Image (cartoon, rainbow, N blue to C red):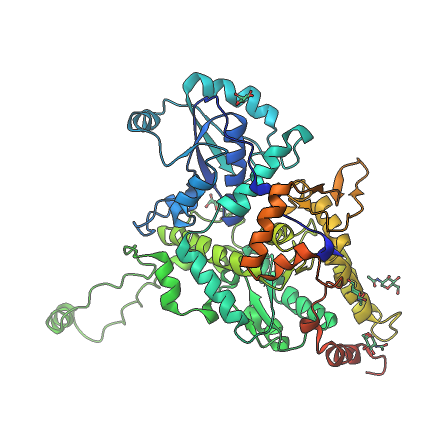
Length: 544
Ligand SMILES: *[C@@H]1O[C@H](CO)[C@@H](O)[C@H](O)[C@H]1NC(C)=O
Ligand SMILES: *[C@@H]1O[C@H](CO)[C@@H](O)[C@H](O)[C@H]1NC(C)=O
Ligand SMILES: *[C@@H]1O[C@H](CO)[C@@H](O)[C@H](O)[C@H]1NC(C)=O
Ligand SMILES: *[C@@H]1O[C@H](CO)[C@@H](O)[C@H](O)[C@H]1NC(C)=O
Ligand SMILES: *[C@@H]1O[C@H](CO)[C@@H](O)[C@H](O)[C@H]1NC(C)=O
């Protein structure tokens, strides 16, 4: 069903740069990878809305790291700055930095700053921010926690939504070294000629200890129910969160080909991405300098008559990680302690690993997201990937399991173990199957779109060709379009696509010809499903 949908890169067309110029916007973005990625898109749109020039945003996670390689500035640590500026030149003027005198003035705090609240409206920017910008010519925007612009915009601003996609999927490219290693990982995963699945556990550090094993075990069972054979290649995104391999045991026991970036790349390849870094104060305790033999004998002689009591043992060394690691603060204190310089550097590194995993997950033949433990939806990182896949490879398999239904399924495993009311495998498979289809896309529109536009960039950022079947639009109770209803693509798009699909043999391009079979499940990945699911059912057998 989904594969018949044609999502073309309508977003890749701009309406021309604004003529008026109201001043400069500089911005600081706090937060991790997901926040950075979506905040940059929002900031570009805000600059466009206000006819302002955007200064390349500063990423706090990298600037605060201090210890990141001097090769990079904040934004260029992660992204290709030149491409970003060039790709958006028709939309928004972007500069690398403020001129010298404006920089000085900024240092002297001559310019106002604003911290927009979550999901700020275009009205807020027009009425609150614009007058101050016009007055001072420079304004700072501090983005905390992402979402500095409402996700759903009025229809009159549809062009701005397309601009968001254009930023996210065309202008915002990782710097070439990251992109190259990401592509190499994809190549290594596909080297055997088999497809691979990417899975991102949605766990936060503080819930990991309690739910990690359980979640991985459940995901393993669900994949088995779907019929994925035990030799399926599964790429684990976000493996940093785990801090150790122990947590992976339940999933690896079912799927031996569970890999992550560390098992697919050499240490060297990974550390090369970071560039040359200066040393930081070490995390290890400093033992006192060793005493020479002469000093020891002197001390012995000075130490008074024998017998003497043994000296007290040396104070137990204090390791920074005992305070800073999650195992240090979990249970002890609700708030994390202030990170050390090493922790800041780790946060910066994590951005790069997240970027690598992002590339691999967007490319994957199938994607399975983890769960938010509160059942509120999918975690941000997974949602970002699901949105990107929806835009770029709508025909690839993307599961959108519903946490509540999955929880109910697992309750039924124990309640009805000996009296199965129905075939559990079939129930689980039916839910997951639906979740990868239109039904899942609609629920993702309801759940995710209000949170972030990039979690569900449809229908604004796609169009359909005359060849593609028109999809019945699905609306919510407020009449808001959730799915389908794409406009027909402009001729120029259709023409340029024809060139793309002859040049490039990637599977997603087959969409344009509408040649893919209707079934969304990849036959390759379902091959051994029969043997596997009967094993699964044996466990459910009442006579077991
Ligand atoms: C931005 O420029 C366009 C014309 O290029 C104009 O229509 C619009 O009102 C301007 N907006 C602001 C906030 O200055
Ligand atoms: C928790 O950490 C904060 C900040 O580090 C500190 O102010 C507070 O006293 C700590 N609370 C407890 C119960 O240790
Ligand atoms: C769980 O079992 C009950 C009754 O046995 C059934 O009505 C319900 O649909 C089942 N739930 C799921 C998610 O399979
Ligand atoms: C899964 O969905 C496909 C269509 O997309 C359908 O052909 C198949 O029968 C479904 N399988 C199950 C178990 O529901
Ligand atoms: C449950 O469904 C699976 C997949 O269709 C099938 O292989 C298995 O035999 C069924 N088990 C029972 C007990 O009906």
